[in-house]
Every structure is written in C-alpha cells, then in structure tokens.
Image (cartoon, rainbow, N blue to C red):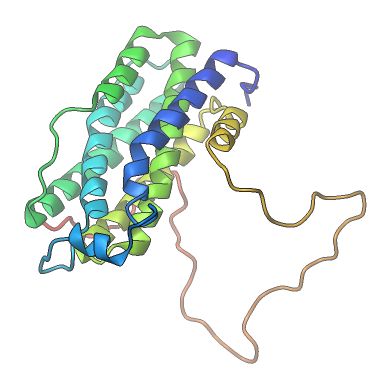
Length: 258
C-alpha cells in the first residue's frame, strides 16, 4: 500500500472538493432542516404522481444521478485508456459499467415522472475532467482516485437520505440501485491504494459542527468482550447475508422500468 497521507497536493484537492461538493449538496439536504420549514414546505414542493409524491429533494436526486454519469463515465474511460496501473484501469471500468446502467435507470424514471435532466456535466465537473486530462503518470492516478472517491463519498450520504425519506416508489428503487453502484465504486477506488483517508477525514471534520460521541478512547486495559447479539430460543432463520460483496458489478438487479 502506498503512503499518500503526506502528499500536500492531494490533501488540498480533497479539502477543496469536500467543501464544494458539500455546498452543492446542501440545498438538497436542507429542505427538511432549515429553520421555519417543515411538513408544509415539504408538501408545497411536492407533486402527486401515480408512484407517490415527488418532492423537490427527489427531483434534485434524479438530476445529481444524471450529472454523476455525465462526468464519471468519461473519467472512467480516460482511466481505462491512460492509467499506468491495472487497479486504476479496473476502477475506471467499474465507473463506466455502473454509471451507464444507472444512467439508463435515471432516464427511465425521470421520463415517467416528467423530470427534465441535464445533458452536460456541471461547470465544476467539467473542471475536474480538465484537471484529470492535464495530469499524467502517478499524479494522474492520485488525482483520479481522490477526486472520484470524495465525490462518491458525498453522494453516498445523499442516497441514504433519499432512500430513507422519499415517498415515491420509483425514486426509492433508484436510490437502492444507486447505493449498490456507489458502494462498488468506492470499494474499487480505495483498492487502487491512492486514496488519502487522512485528507478525507480532515476535510469532512472541517465542515462539521457536531461534537463527536461514542465510547472513550481505548486505554491500556482491554475492554470486556461484549455478549453476542442474537435471537433467544430456538429460532431457525431462512435468509442469508447478501452474497455479492462490494467491488463486483453483477448486482442481479431487475431491468430498469422504462
């Protein structure tokens, strides 16, 4: 594993990207959280559909899924064509396959819901593509892994929020599909060995105002072993943990609804 935590350039890229992506996502996350808003504003921003109410947050989510594919597919193709290492090429391949599939799904969902989608990446996303195009060798691979890893990490939180709160069944299914794809891409990007986890954590902490919670820091004495959690009595379950680990493209999903 390469030690990349001390690369100042990468840290600056990630810190800046965390702030900018967080700023882009803030309007989506803030619909239910802004002072003075609530259920009335949620309903005012929603429209009725045969699949359930479609909120402003839902519509923003559809646009962001589309935008992700518009810049990450060419970024993945560039990695396949230019990256020196197999790990980065493989990550690029997963970006191409995953976002091509998601793009088909989001176009189908948006057509049924009447939501207009963009046809070009945002100005910021185009800037990231230009930044990657201008780099080469080890610098290119580091930029690729960290730019894509930070952007996926931010949208991962958004997907969870939409999956939890949407009242629209089409959006709910798309969020489930996007969750699988983004986790797969995060896993592949981390597998390149170029992701700067210290910079990601520091960048996230810089935008957070919440105090950390949880147990105290470990001391010299080992904590007692926790009791295993499980059912009581004789209970025989029939289900099994999901078989497909992150890092695999085959999700066995149903075909998208068009």
